[in-house]
Image (cartoon, rainbow, N blue to C red; front, top):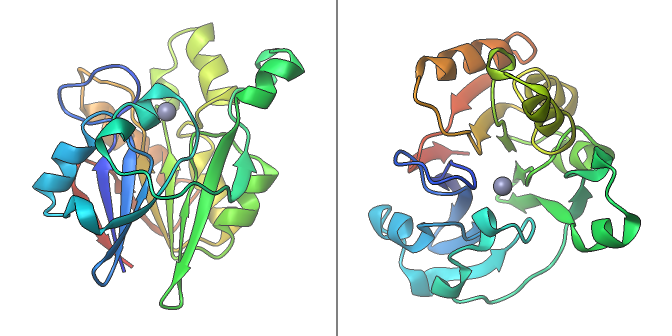
Length: 217
Ligand SMILES: [Zn+2]
């Protein structure tokens, strides 16, 4: 089983990263998680034939995760675990019912790959990540990058940051932790700061995801 981080960026256009999209290869089978900006181009770069992708699973309906879905054949859609994504921001319940987000637990060849979706620490995440050989987790920014109240609310309620992702992986007993869904950065040295912050809480292998990173599981 191989996991390819096809895109590791977020909703804002980033010249270094396509939007967050992850692919799992098992033999000749390919399962695509999300279909963000640039997904088809990234699959071509990774030599993934489009007609060998089945199914496509969506974590949620934000445009950075479905923006290029039209470009991919949508074969199926099914939830796994519901995760928290913006639930604490004070939106009315009717709005939150439409703003749902899922993470996925993928089991094959005796191995487990967990994909967080866009979330913060929550029960659904604990269930899907338990004992994972690889946890692909959104990690928007290091604590040192939190410049204002808006960013603080993002990492508290919407996209986990460097202060919590390592704790989540350690509690789940994950073996490898791959960080995806990065903010656009002019200063790339924050990636090292982010990795060091996460490693304070997680003793396993930490991979700071880049577009087209491949991980053997
Ligand atoms: Zn997102």
